[in-house]
Length: 159
Image (tube, helix red, strand yellow):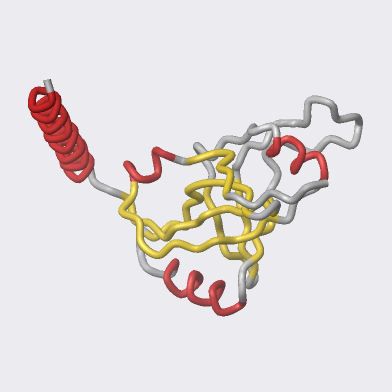
């Protein structure tokens, strides 16, 4: 079997960038069963409601939805089970210390395959207020309008 060389994204949590101010990011391995890996390789996972916690010095991914493998048998996994994340001790201690701050949450941003191994990208985040969200939308739309104007200007220059 040929090993993958590139990073292949399976699932992204786009709403996290809208709902949270993101801080430090971490890359963690995931302890998965066989049918979970096969389901991820099919490109099936959802991180919409997912979050991570630190319990007894271990990091756990909660509420991530990896559906049952389509060709699985009675050995299929539970879709929303709690999964252990694999990080260095120093990283876990740093995350645990940062989570003690009020309003901090550990949010999974994406699940992907890196050199054949399933990884999850985590970020420390604090919730945005409503006015912060409106400001994000305004910035995004102004960038979009600037890009359109630039594209229109370059098109006219060539013609």
